[in-house]
Length: 239
Image (tube, rainbow, N blue to C red; front, side, top):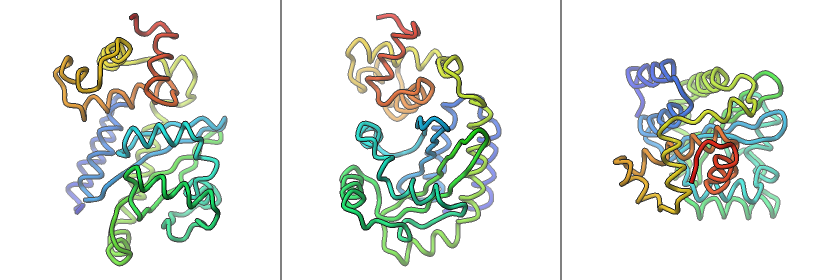
């Protein structure tokens, strides 16, 4: 569980973050420090475009975007109407669409407990910082009561850093990929599997995922295939 030293360490890592991919590493650190299954930072800008980083599976992230679940997600809908953190149990899951969404989420590894913090920024920016876990109600109530202040603090630090990197989120800003992101996108475009890409670059598949998700974030892509296509279209990689 989190203690003051661990929290200070994460805040220092956020302060020292110099690129968007650093935020992807931080969410994994937050997950591990708090001993929960998932941590997600989800951004929706004024135009409705979605960006984010988190520990959910890539399969779930792709499915969420492909099925445009933002239209029926009770977490997004409920938090958009609120200014304070909310436990998922207090949201409205009564509609058929919401129940089907929840079932699909559970089948893709999303836990049964959630605590989401709505954040509002300039120019219509709306973001959510979510802690997600699988456990009974009593355990979850103790965890959120003990750590709610820390999670709120981390949520706002995360959003502040994201705004620092992408103050206007213009297309030109989003096209700046790091050398490692370019390498990963190039190999994926050549038909390599994720395991083959990781082996070729001498990195773990976990680290590769950080590069892939960061590239998707910057390119505003719906999924990995879309990110590769956009990278080729922007002339960032040559295959």
